[in-house]
Image (cartoon, rainbow, N blue to C red):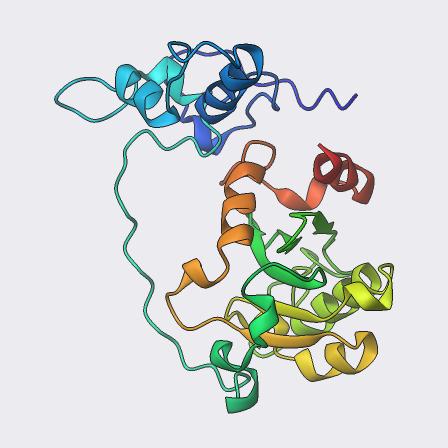
Length: 257
C-alpha cells in the first residue's frame, strides 16, 4: 500500500492544484457510475452517468464546484473551460516519414498489442515524468526523469546542457531503458506529442526497434489513451508541484495502481 503524502489542512485559502493532494482514496463519479452496474446488475433504477453526478454537484448559475469539493478532483480545476492553446513552434525534428498520417493502420483499431502513446507531465522547476500507455491493454509505464548532476548549482547557460531531466539525451536514455524491458513483439510503434524532448527519436528507434510517430500540432485526440491517463495521474502528481522528488519505486507503485 502506498499511503502518499500528507495533504495540508483545508483552510479555504490554499489553491488545491498548487499543493499536494490526498492520493486516490475516494471514488470518482465515473467509478461510482460503473460500480453501480456491478452491484445492481438487475436493477435498472440504480443507474446514473458520471455527468449527472457532476451536474448535481455544480453550483447552479456558476458552473463550478464548491471549493471543498475541488480538492477531491484529480485535476483541481473547478471550472470547465478550455485553456488557451500555445503558439505553434517550428519542429524541425518532425520529418515527413514520422508524421501521424504515416502510422500503420493496425495501430488505429487497437486489435494488435504493441502500439504505444506517450507524453510528459510537467511540474515546477523543470521537473517531469514520462508517461507511455499501450493502446490495446491500456498498460501504463512511468519513466523516471531525475534532474542531472549540476542542477541548481549555477545559473542556466543559454544553449547549455539540459539539466532538468527531460532534455533530448536524458529522455532518450530513460525511454530506451524503459522500453527495452518489454518483449520485442510489444515494441512496435510509439505516438508522441511534438515536444523537443524526443528530437533524438531516430536513435531511440534504432536502439529499441520502436518506430516513432508524432501527432499533428494541437491534436491531443490523436493520443486519446495517453491524454486520458495523464489526467488520471494528476491525482498523484498535481500541477504546480516538484515531480523530481518521486523515486522510480514511487512511479512504479502509481503505475500499478
